[in-house]
Length: 406
Image (cartoon, rainbow, N blue to C red; front, side, top):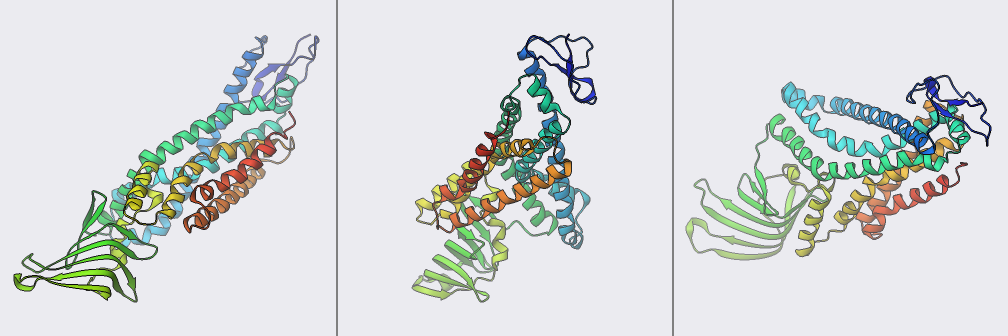
C-alpha cells in the first residue's frame, strides 16, 4: 500500500521503503505543498521541485520580514537620536521623511547578512521541529540537496547587496547628507567636488584642497586665495598640509605670496606656520571622503588618485577589499545557520534561533571590525584584514556543514 509523508497543512511527499510503501504521518500542519488527495509520486525530480519551492518560499518570506523589521527598528532609533536636531531647525515633515528614506539603502546593506543568517536558522529550525527533516530523509533526500536552495538564494542576495552598495547607496547617502546639512540645518552649499578636487567659498576667499581627513583634522594639498571686499586677490598660500591644533590651523611646507594693493607679489617660504583660516574642521566635514559612503569602483578610483599623488591609501584599501568581503559573507552565514539549526533535530524554538543568530552575527561583526581596523593602520596587509573574518567564519561554516547528519 502507498502512503504519504505529511508536511504542514496537508502538503505531502510520498514515502517509500524499498518495494513496500508504509504510512508515516509527520505533522497535520503545513504551508506550501499542494493539497491533493490521491496525488501520485512523479519521481524524485518532481519531489525536489516541490521541496525547492517550499523552502525558497519559507526562506524568502522570513528574509524579507527580518530585513523590514531591522530597517524599521534602525529608523526608529535613528529618529529619536536626531529628533532634537530636526525640531531645533524647524524641519518639515517632508524633509524628515526624505532624509530617512535616503538612509534605507545603507541600513539594508548592513542588515542583509544578519537577515540571511536568521532566515536560515528559523527556516531549517522550523523544518526540524515539525518533523519535515525526517520526511525528507524518509524520501531519501539528502539535507545537502535540501540546503542547495537557500545557498543559491544567498548567492543572489549577495550579488544584489553588492550592486545596491555600488550604485544606489552612494547616491542615497549624498542625498541624505545634503538634506541634513543644507535643507534642514540651513547651511549654505559652500563648495563642490570638481575633477577630484574640493573648492570651498570661505570667509576670507576661495579655498582649494585635495583631501580632508576628518579623523586627524588634516587638510592636504591646499591652495588658499585670499580676496578683499572688491574680490581682488591679496594673498595666496600653497601648503602641503594643514593640521588643526589647539584651535588653530598649523600649515606645513607653505609658500605664501602677498600682493597688497596690486603690487608685485612678495614670496615667503615657511616650513611651519599659522596662517589665518577662520573655518573649523566641522565646516569641512561635508567633504570628508567616507569609504562607507562610496561604491567599490568609486573608492578604487579615489585610491588611485591618492596613490598617484603620493598619499598613503592603506586605510582606504582595507575598506575597498572589505566591501567585497562583507557583501558575500551572506553565503558563509547561511551555511552556519543551516548547520546550527540541524545539529540537533526538534531542539530549540524561534527565540532560540533568533538568539543564536544575534550572537553569531555580532561575533562576526566584532571580528570583521577589528580586522578592518588593523588593516587600516597597516599592521596587516589590507587584503588579508578585509577577508580575515570571512576566512575564519568560512572555515567554521564548512566544517559544521559537512558534519550534518544527512
